[in-house]
Image (cartoon, rainbow, N blue to C red; front, top):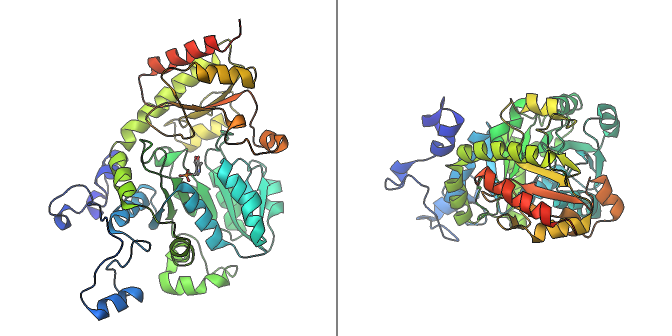
Length: 421
Ligand SMILES: Cc1ncc(COP(=O)(O)O)c(C=O)c1O
């Protein structure tokens, strides 16, 4: 990893953590397609179980291919360590479970990805845990929600699909003032737009299923630990055994030891391999994703059949100035939503698309579309949908890296056909 110190992102993302000298000269990490690893002596396996020997033991606990990806992703986010998992939701749920005990609560931005919202509001409730959902822009409400049983603050760095952008430095300040870790899901912003660890976050989560792998072929997730949080601040006495064992990486140790290996949220090594292949073109892909998204947002904004467009890149978006500053002018993400007249118009629009795929994913090379109201949020009450910014006439578009003229032409012809004559 040191070999790439000082190199820039586009170089590091390709070269970080590669050790061809250990892989018969291969410049891609080999896939260790095995469930367990032999130890030559009884002592070696015993030492490994005692954490005193790094020789891998069993596929659910760790895998050498996954370890290479963990090093790459930790480096990409300027973190001290990382664990890759079988999905983004595994990363979200394991992190929450490691931080929370029955009776605890946490404060989260209310703009959340669907499954995260369900985990927070329904599933964790079963364990006596309360998620206090607030508008992250309202610092006073956020601070008032914090009490003696609050364990962390959580936010998405671009909300899916609300498309809002929280002020991370402000959240980081509040978290620090109250002695709490700030955990963020940065799936939509990606390490191309920002490194949340440098802006006040202590832990960064990604669904690697999206832009990091980039080809819609490898479900996965990652938790990156900045190693910045002070677990000895008097609020986290239950972390003592993990601090004693792993110091600044106490949270990662707890996630791994208590949750990841016991809930069995392992990443398949082939998925790590595919994710690393995708990472090689990450910077190139992001450049194209971001410029295409900006063009598509402009096209939709000027289209007479489109009622409104929600994209932080547009100057009228309420978080535009903040996003410009926080993302350093590099772009605004490649997901956007727009509103048509009603649900029936959305259905006709989707049914008439020729190039753009209709499916439940984002962050693929291909442009993807979904009607959230009738799909991901189908089981939600109308009130919950409205609170999350989901409307019957809303389309979510994940802008891909095709020729942008082909994307806008497909949108234009489907919009035209969405109108009943
Ligand atoms: C922001 C965000 N976080 C987490 C997830 C969950 O990721 P996965 O589907 O890999 O579990 C998603 C999935 O769309 C997402 O958009």
